[in-house]
Image (tube, rainbow, N blue to C red; front, side, top):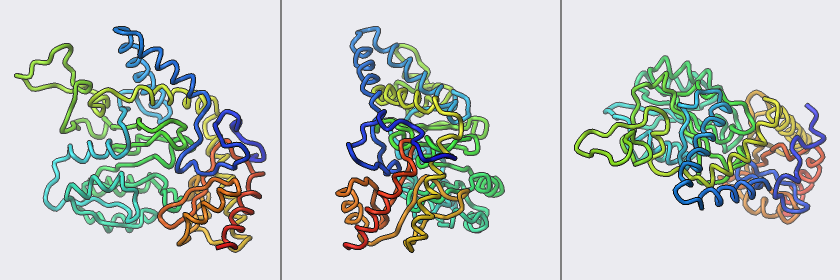
Length: 371
């Protein structure tokens, strides 16, 4: 894959002048086209009685675009405010029984694990790169295997097909957070029973809306424990003396108004994603990631990210006890990386190219030298 030129024109983004932006795993720069999308939302919202059909139509149109992006039916896609909200709705809906187990990584993202932890269910930790270890942890009692498709900690990419087989053997559901994958890696969401993704990273959207996927073929009887006016099937004034019926599809994830402004913004992002051939962005960022890993190895700088291209995502991570100070030092040199959890993280997107590796390495080595 040729990576000497950006796959996406950097001028399409609000990248700070003179900066190398390599923190897509934390926040991507905003698309300039989102300004027009938000203006369109403001116009539509200001139309009085006509406004609600206009903004709801855009939310439904977004669900259809996201469904195509994830290779699933539109009816299986819902909108939530965040991965944490979607995961909480799922966890609260399940009839947890004594002895139920959930298997996850010890360093899994809090949005996935915190709702489970507070529910009181037993958590068992396993190396999610090792399906045999996951199977041992499941121990025939697992109700759920919860995993990020790509780890935010070290950029490892998990073998979801192998985890699906483990889940099926244990009689467990597979729940996947695609946040660190969706937007650069083609997604086949049907491998999961439920899946979620935030949209402000590689998806190029804003905070406030996230994707929720309900595999109705695998979990046909699922129903949330709570509802709101948006997720019930009643038209007009509901008859509260009778049991309320929910909408039949994944719109039941959305209890109140979806975040319409964020949905309009995500339409602008989807215009960019749909302009690229399938797999082009994955090839681009994987090549950049591999090239940076090679440069780090040559410089004798250890990375926690797997070297195997089939096992690493779009992140390159370096463990460092003073990661925040290192990232701040690099920012002063115009290289915008990410920190947290004791690691420096570089995340590539389509606006990056191979020529930026020199500046990344110069800023990193200078920061390490000055430490």
